[in-house]
Length: 361
Ligand SMILES: CC(C)(COP(=O)(O)OP(=O)(O)OC[C@H]1O[C@@H](n2cnc3c(N)ncnc32)[C@H](O)[C@@H]1OP(=O)(O)O)[C@@H](O)C(=O)NCCC(=O)NCCS
Image (cartoon, rainbow, N blue to C red; front, side, top):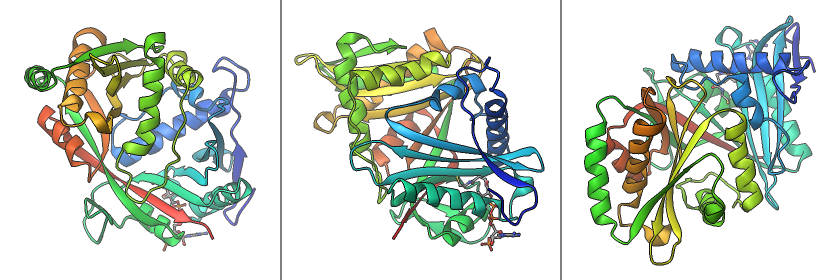
């Protein structure tokens, strides 16, 4: 496809079988540009991934259709476009991104890429389009989330969304915890949570979920799609079974990343009722990421969130990632209970993301 920008091309991303395959060059370049865009926005390499780490997330997946294009200007890769279409029954959702190197902003390339997104969504009968972007702090006019919690500058990306008919639905806080020096607080908060959570115990595993915990983990993962604060965003209720858990775990194992799951088990029933995930890439000195954390609704009020987070961090530091300097996490700005725990542990806000939505007519 071409537009009025001379030499512009959107080429369907080739997904190689492995990064050793003969057709892996596009994927390598796609990853390089992805990492550069994030460095330009955030000023760090904290979100960088190697192509080997990223590839499993693009390979065929029965849970979603993932379409992606590389953006090429005069033969050079300058960005990427992607649309994810969840395959839950009756899903109306499409999640998307357009990410361009800063030198190519403001020439209509993003708008041309966006046309591919709406076209793809329509082809698949999807009418709810949602997308996230980081909005680095800046002076000037701001947009406040309709939740009343959090605001972002009306920057270039915000204007791009507004121009294409989007509304800001939620502001998400990115926080980080510097691990050196956090051990004593984690230990203290863990002891406090253990006292408040009599009748529950901690269970942990790395890599593939043990057979005894597969059903419980599948149930908790499905509740993540229904029980996390989502403002007026739309998420399909996800169905998780043993195969989906295995596919999820395999993405980490195949990419060489380490995932620690820390769960709280209700001792009398044997049920798992809360969990937290910590992840690190192949570089042991790289940042860690805290992914899902959830306490099932019926078990809230026993400090189980604090329990799984602190138990996870303690094992992480001691046994798994002692060289990792920090943990990064994302939370809805209105999610006070979760932010309270993170703030007590020592997480501090470093950036804000906007969650944007448009409903096609
Ligand atoms: C947000 C982003 C995708 C926008 O892409 P872009 O190519 O810069 O946006 P466009 O050029 O299409 O549109 C921006 C402006 O340029 C104008 N424009 C459109 N065609 C143009 C052309 N041929 N020449 C000059 N300007 C043009 C648009 O009208 C628009 O003007 P406005 O701000 O007054 O509405 C891009 O800045 C980006 O990649 N940012 C970093 C990642 C990110 O935040 N992505 C958000 C979605 S995931």
